[in-house]
Structures are given as C-alpha cells and as structure tokens.
Picture 1 (cartoon, helix red, strand yellow):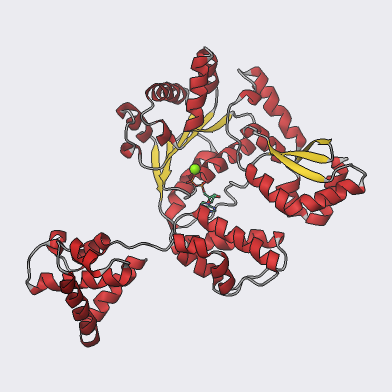
Picture 2 (spheres, rainbow, N blue to C red):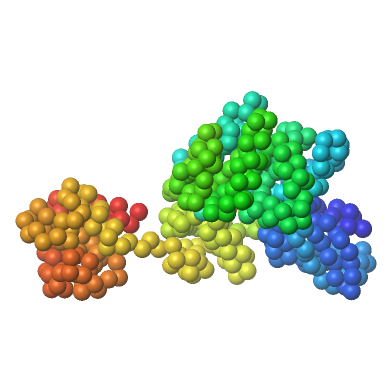
Length: 455
Ligand code: ADP
Ligand code: MG
C-alpha cells in the first residue's frame, strides 16, 4: 500500500520533493490510528512532519488505511545504509553486502554515524574562504593513490567541516560501493572504545576499526585530555596509515593548537595535508543564500524575495552558515504562512532575534588596537600618560569611536583609557567631532576606521 501512496505522492509533490523527502521514508506500522514512519535524520522528520503530513494522511485514507495521524521515528542508519537507501538502483545494495560478508564484520556492524543526504558536493557552495578545503576534499574523494594522509580539515563552528566530510563519504560510496567507509564523531569513537573496554570486546573493536578503507573522525578536539582514548586512536591511526588506508579528520582548530593532545598525535595529524576553512565572506554568504533560496523555491511555490533581501541577510548575519540557513528557512516558512512576498520589513520583523544576536559587538580594546595600528603608535600609549599630539590625537579618535560604536558610558570609557576622567573623554569626543568638520584627513581617517571596525 505504501508503494501506491508513494506513487501518488510523486505526482502531487513533484520529483524533487519526492526524491528528497518521500523516498527515504519507510512505513513501519499502522497502529491505533497512527502511521509510524522511520526517517534517517531528525531534520527530515521535522521537515516532513511540517510539510507533508497532511498529504501523506490524505493518500493513506484514500486507500482505506485507518490512520488519523502520522509519526516519525529517527532511525540511525550507518553510511552504507544511507547510500543504499538513497540509491535508486536497488542492485547497488548487493555488492556492499557481499563484499562485507567476505571480509570481516558486515557493513551493518559498522558503528558509523548517519550521513546527511543533503551534505553533498553538489550542495556545497565554493568561495574564496573554503576553496582550498573543498579542492582537497574533492581530491581525496576521487580516490586514486592516497596522497594526502591524513586530510585534516579545521575551522570554526558552522563553516562546513561536517558537510565536506559527508560529501566525501557519499562520493566514495558512489564511486566504489565496495569500499568500507566509516564516519563518526570523536565522541562516538570514545563511546565505542569505552563500551568495548567494559564489555571486554577490545579485539572486536580493534578488528572493526582496522578493517575499514576510509576512516573519518569529526571534531577530534573532543578526545583532547582523554588519555586512553587518545592512545587507542593513535594505534588505530597508525595501523590504518600503515595499510595505506585513507584517514580524514576534522577539528575546530589546527593540530598544534589543540590543548591536551599528545605531541605524537599532533605530529601524526600534521603529516598529511592540513587545510582550514576561513570565516565566510560576504560573497560566499550571498552565494549560499542564493543557492538555498533556489532550492526552497521548489518547495514554496510562488514565494519571491524583494530585491536586496538576500544581500541584507548576507551582510548582517555573519556568525556562521548554520544560523544563515536557519534564518532563510524561517523566512520561507513565515512568508508562506502569512502568504506575503518576502520584503525587507518582513525579514526584519521575522528575524529580529537573530539579527540582534549577530550584531557585531565592537569592544573598546579592539578600537584601541585598530586606532593605534592605523596611526602607528604603541597600543600601550593609548592608556599611557603621554600628551604629545601624535599620541593624544589618536587616543581621542579611539575615545570618539568608543562612544560611537559601543554602549559604554563616558566614565567607563575613561577607565579603559588608563583611568582618565569622564570630562577628559568628553573633551576628546567633542574635539574629534569638530575636527571632522574642518579637517578632511580626520574625516577620512575616522570613516575608514569606523568601516573597518564594523565589518
Ligand atoms: P561544521 O561541521 O564546520 O560546524 P557544518 O558542516 O555542520 O559545519 O555546516 C553547518 C551548516 O551550514 C550545514 O547545514 C551545511 O550544509 C551548511 N554549510 C556550510 N558551508 C556551506 C557551503 N559552503 N555551502 C552550502 N552549505 C554550507
Ligand atoms: Mg561539524
């Protein structure tokens, strides 16, 4: 029956939606009027529940299935299973299973984390800040002789490390389904390890981790300070490298900067290719927004953006891509609810909290640093006693900018300038205000500094 319902849904929701959201659903049972489906990720569960529940129910009812409600359960599947589910060619599943039964534990026993079907190379927008990481990930996914081993990706939260790792896993599985790809977080690695110790199954554990062709460990900084887990990780790492197997690691910072990580591990992590994902720039953010908006458009037919809205978001939400995505998704959902065009006003109203939170907070210290760099004076002179003009003037500029760009009061600013009186600060602020009207160089300096600080 579910097969027939799916067939009908294909017609009503369209090909794209069908492939993304309906195809991966599995009907587990119908019980007490509840149709229970399993889905690969909680994101999908939420999305499908919100967007397709009614249609699924309608079609089920039309075929006399006694369901009045749908529920979704997140089923943790490993990498191979996900790829198999996503593959339209059902024969693709066979070689995986066969290869697995011939060598070591079966694929089903691979204790990997589920792969997110959306994290593919196709969906990854490339820009200056991530082009190197992307190129390296592509190269590793293409296979061939193992050149970069390990590949070490690092960067701040939400810059695409996990996305790239999943993309590599997808790509490798598609290219060669026989390869055993294991993706998991460092936390899961530790959890497995501790469990194996407790259950006295270290042999199985070692055998399992040494039998994969590609090992990916996400957020490796997590095992810093966890001594026996590090030890085991080190041995696993060496065993795989010795066999010429590919290893891919991510972390939130460079290997040398992870505290409480053994030196021998640090140096091991550094011996392949280390690439970082830089914070996003405006162009990349806009590119990501445009791509994602395009994808949503299929979902929310007829919704349009007024000119400048995406640019506005790319400009204002600079923290990380995850927040950017969340904002866009909310905008679409909200606009479809109220049935309005997505205007600047709507965006501001609907995203007020996000916009507020990502307003850059400039600090007095940062201002002092920038200003002293600009005028080539020492930072210590900002708070020091010198009164010669070449130092006093930049100090006044810094005071002025502190008043303009932070919410500090005059006495608070004074305190940060070596305990100066609030009247001194007020005098400085006034002086710079005046000078800007008479001295064009001053005007330009202040404008430039303001822009740099607000960027
Ligand atoms: P990290 O692991 O570095 O914290 P993620 O890989 O989880 O970050 O990325 C956070 C979110 O942002 C994900 O939904 C991901 O798809 C998205 N994302 C990040 N970078 C890009 C990019 N360049 N193109 C498209 N989506 C991206
Ligand atoms: Mg991550």
